[in-house]
Amino acid sequence: MGLAFLGTLLMGLPIVFVLGITGVAYFLATDQPHLLLVVPQRMFAGMDQFVLLAVPLFVLAGNIMDVGGLTRRLLNFANSIVGRFRGGVSLTAIWGSFLFGGVSGSAAADAAALGSVLIPDMKRQGYNVDYAAGLIGVSSVMAPLVPPSIAMIIYGALSGTSIARLLVAGLAPGFLLATCLTAYAIWIARRRGYPKFESVGLHGILAAAAEALPVLLLPVIIVGGIRGGVFTATEAAAVAAVYALLVAGLYYRALSWDYLRRALVATAVTTASIYLLVGMANIAAFIFAMESLPQTVVDGLFGITENRFLVLLLVNLALLVLGMFLDAVGVLILTVPALMGIGQALGMDPVHLGVMVVFNVLVGFTTPPVGICLFIVAGIAKRPMERVALQSLPMIGIALLVLAALALVPQLALFLPNLIVG
Image (cartoon, rainbow, N blue to C red; front, top):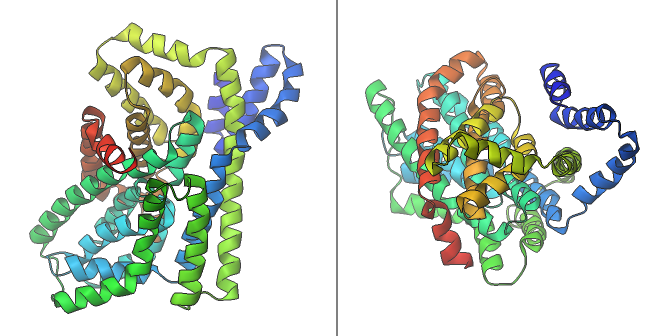
């Protein structure tokens, strides 16, 4: 099974086919071909979960907001607040990513949307293009930490953890990462003499806030509605999709039939890929259960050391390595069964564990050789991937420090869920 997994992975096959071929190889190698009949049943059982209905609806909400041309409104609002500082457009990139995460919930969408707008602007203002691309690539990992977060929903579906608590739990780590990246960007801007914008004053800030307010309200409606018991996390996704349609179509009048068609097609493609991965994941989970793999991993780790901090370090190192080669959903699919066992052995709250795992996996979005967000921004900037990656290293280091704080201080993840969700 291991040979089949590594072989197909090194061949460059998509992770969904890697999982499927590995599962078939296991059944044949263990002389259990009759279990191939279980494959479609397990795939359907994995996808047939009420909570997963949130995925296409949140994706649709983000796509409608995106094709409705709302990215610039969010960036104008962020720029009105931080643009007056040295290196203002780099700060706009950071906080624009944080705000855009409340719409898209996707790091790749964040990197593509903001990169296409900001990288040309930063180049015209004299910024190092590799630095500009790297900054946007690393900042984009905040998007899946802000509700709605597809990665959090997938983790919750795989682990049975409260989606509502997970969605809220990512806010504080995301804010901390944005703050740390802001400090670094200001330091770089002063060293390199990057420009700043003139202050727009209170009137300009209020005008930009008013223009972006309907977009900014989306995560507030999601969290507030769940907290108030008005709707479940899955129902919140339907509310978000309808709200996005009304805002983009009626309030901003930026949604044509062609834009709507593009949003629906993009949603169908994204959802199909996620659901197929989840279906394949259930086959892998079935095999893991047959082989008692989660308990084997737990016993193996604690056989190496019983020190809580060393176990956490080993877990995070393993996730970082996987994140260099696989996408977020693929890593979650492969590791969540074993991670739940490790979390229980360490006495970790499943929400704390989930946020730590998702944050760790997201760092892989900016780490070669896969590093999908770096590939996206490097393509937009028309710069070699290795040069963008080199400029990103200090910022990746900052993200790793935030990850370490998150792993060691559970309240970073649990404070807001305990306060808001209960």
